[in-house]
Length: 460
Image 1: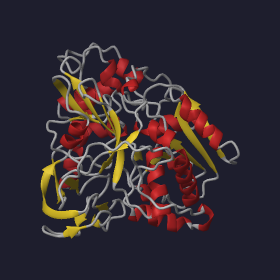
Image 2 (image 1 turned 90 degrees about the vertical axis):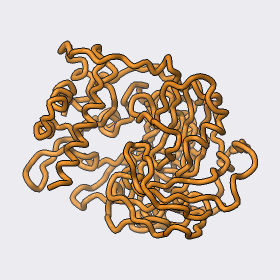
Image 3 (image 1 turned 45 degrees about the horizontal axis):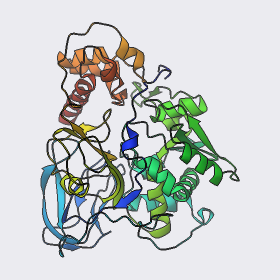
């Protein structure tokens, strides 16, 4: 695999929300909870239409190891279990819960959340040393925790490496290199102690002896805060990294911090497959995931809500909000004051890796890190032109792939050839599309290619 060197230096646009403290949104009138909010097997409902459920109750689960249960994020009645629009695309079966007592009065609550008072919790201290590794993984699994950086891979699976893959190092990812997004930054500033507790729990769960907190240099307050809190800790260091994109990718972090490159591995059938961080003794977790782990261990709280950045030139009041999972985008936008000018595009996530939405009737899911609202001027569509073979996409691909070749194979519907060019190694960072002078939507083609490969595999 090609060594990641250059990166892209983007306009950050984080000033819109980076000073906005995390606020709790008022409860929505209903939530829509898709049964597929994670990588792996979708869940099966444990409730039926008409059931009354309480906040925190497990309402869906799966027998598959690579899966993650889903819990009711509000109390109310199950009004339907049906296929609904999903923010990642298509329709997915979802459980719809309606609040029995209607919407609470008032809008966003902006309590003094110094120390985390907006998070409902008991003051329960629990020493990591008193827990067994299996107990930590069990609590994480039952809480439905997945990677909150966007990938949504079940965390208990990531923390269960094979015995022949010992984990030496944990990297806590606080880079948040995607433009506009500031939710991780605010989590680090407002919940540093819970980030650190979660990191220690992860280290205990896999027996890792060393830990790193990785933060980009544009977050100087967070760097100083974590260095102060960890100054007397043995085995955990804070690493300040260059501000560039995609610095927060797992394999990029491992190279930047440990100078290790994740190798290609051989599968049981003898074919090469993309390697994983555990192949070099490393696990990478997001800071938000660490906080969720803390809540599960200390206070027995399942993953019911997450911090979401609502930002962009077309939204009236950019915020970082603590949002119940399943909350419709429409409710969130309303509580941010609505739109201040004509909207050109609404994106779940950031401008590089986010997914455009066609409706506001889709819900926040576990992987929703942000809602970006762009004006019509900012969302100008640029017509695709012929490739000029400049190789910029190849030079800037952090995974050492051939994006222009992958795009050409997809256009020609050469689905069987895509695996030969390692299409599944693409992390869909968007660097290739960004630097392309011909404005070829390479990531769009690559996503289509991956989808076609999955469809063919499912038919076998």
